[in-house]
Amino acid sequence: MFDMLIILLLSFVPMILYSAILWWFDRYEKEPLIFVIGAFVWGAVPSVILAIIMQVLLNIPIVALSPDNFTYDMIGGSLVAPLTEEFVKALAVITMVIVLRREIHSPLDGLIYGGLAGFGFAAVENVLYLSGAYATGGLGGAIGLAVFRAGVFGLNHAMYTGFTGLGAAMALEIKTVWLKPVPLLIGFGIALLTHALHNGLAIISSHTGSFLAFLGAIFADWSGVAVLLVVIAWTFFLERKRIQVYGTHLAGLGVISAEESAVLHSLWRRGINRAHVLLDGNLGGWWQVGRYYHKIAQAAFTFHRQQQGDRRAPQNLARLEQEVSQLRGLLTGANVVLR
Image 1: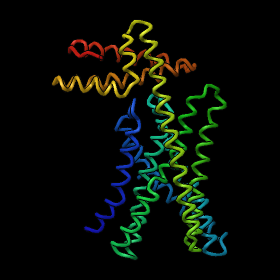
Image 2: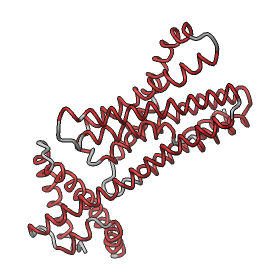
Image 3: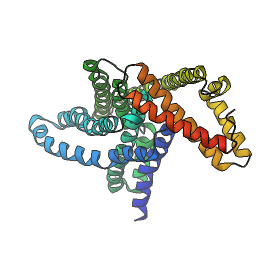
């Protein structure tokens, strides 16, 4: 019982920590915690169950087509596994983008939801693999495998599905209707290719003992992660620019001062402002200022969508600006200065 608890901790704790770090990257307008948990749970439960069912059904023709174990592993590992697993994880991402369209404000949001679904999937997959290692090598074997699965290859599933989520969110940035599926298909295609490449190299390394293939898998995986980190940095400056444009727009209308406009897109100055409120002993004000900045960011991203011709944006923007106005009234009534 104690050993099983260790396996569960080794499987889930690293993935939960990685998820928290990924969520932290969303600096200007964090996704609601309930949706963050939902994406992780979808990857951990329905996605795993559906993937297992599909792989069991497809195992019959794989056996028939495979003359030897190597061919069997290659077909199952580098073709069927990527197709089934990325498909079921993509279902979660696409569903969230459609249902929670108001919450997808930039490409980063799609990447986050995709990554979270991937981390959930990886957590449960780790339980299965570590349990197998425990059966053959005891707790030591399980811990040794956990180092690779949670450490060296810990970001893999999040990286694969992160590309799908990025593509789904990028589709919302495109005005031409018939072009909208293109970034989603490209993102899903990259997810399939990176997943298949990793599995193929891992299978070659396992069957031949090739250390070069093993290094190739590590290089390919971390190259994909590096690409997504560059995308995260790009989206940070993209979001910052959109908030800056919206702040300038509000200042031009006389809704806010030019000084406050300069604060809105600066994480540093926003943090200083909230710290001043907290140091004044106003915990409620500190919380409300955070909500105000969050709503301003949402309004800025919706304003951008409106400028791009999104027909739903004007109604959403009017709702958000009303909420922002109400928050400003509460803060003014509480003598909170938005420096």
